[in-house]
Image 1 (tube, rainbow, N blue to C red):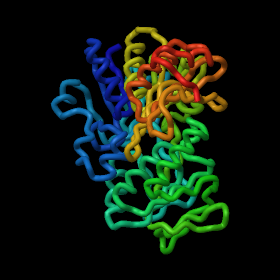
Image 2 (cartoon, one colour; image 1 turned 45 degrees about the vertical axis):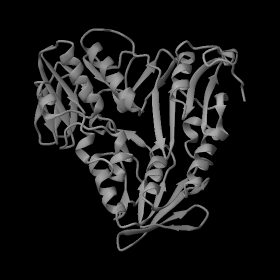
Image 3 (spheres, one colour; image 1 turned 180 degrees about the vertical axis):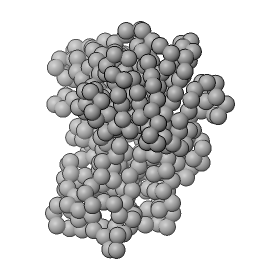
Image 4 (cartoon, rainbow, N blue to C red; image 1 turned 120 degrees about the vertical axis):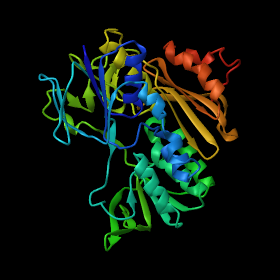
Length: 401
């Protein structure tokens, strides 16, 4: 295997490249990224970059000197447009084709949009350029509407409120972040935002965006009301960036369908937001849009491309920072899981919760309790039985609430 191509130059793609070199592979390496920027971290986009607390270059993952140590052919600002698996070729937007012996797909996701939303004043937040454009739009002090109250939408709302802006969040679900955390945690997130002056319109869908002369003026809701807005941020989730793989012969469902080794075809692997694989630890297929998974799965995919043959079976970890609250979570949070508070009290803004599903602990969540939630992670790792595990000695005496 003399030539490896990595398509996608964000956290997953960069980590895959570094893993290959760290493992001693010395062949010809090509790293392709559709953005002209060198690899950067995405979580700060909805926080420090968005608010102006960080200069854009602070989000850069590696210095030019570190990238040079990869001894790779860096193709930043180039988009992959097609894949020929039998012929072992990747086609780029400029018509060039690159041959490979091994391929890692790490193209991530693309934001969902509303129909007819190509209007001035309407923004999505996925790239560094998106964050800078949104930052510039907010400096005039506009009325902001955020459509979608998942992690991204609520983070954007929190950041905009810290800038002193008038913010309304619209969400068709009855509470924010209902998926994955359920109604009880969602209600606490709603209360947090209300306490900080964010207006919430939950349980109502968006019908369409209103505009005048191609500039957005408001959001029309399903109840017939219109929410005036100068800036609208669409936080409607994402779809895997697999359009360039149409006709490749790879199995494409919710992302690139891989086996437990992150292998999509012989010599072809996927990692990060775009990869769908069966996680042996939980016995279910999953696709994760979490920063830590991008790094861990890229290491696993690169190792398996080199011959490790090790199933990728992580306990997912993700977090969100909103106002003075840090929510951290380990595991999975399937619909219908039972939630129990096992330490602290929600009324004190410090508590830890466990989620049980099909007789096992499958997830733990910490609300401003980083030490406790790290301790309880062991219940998920060990697939502890539910609910007897709630009598855990890990935190000392436990009162289930």
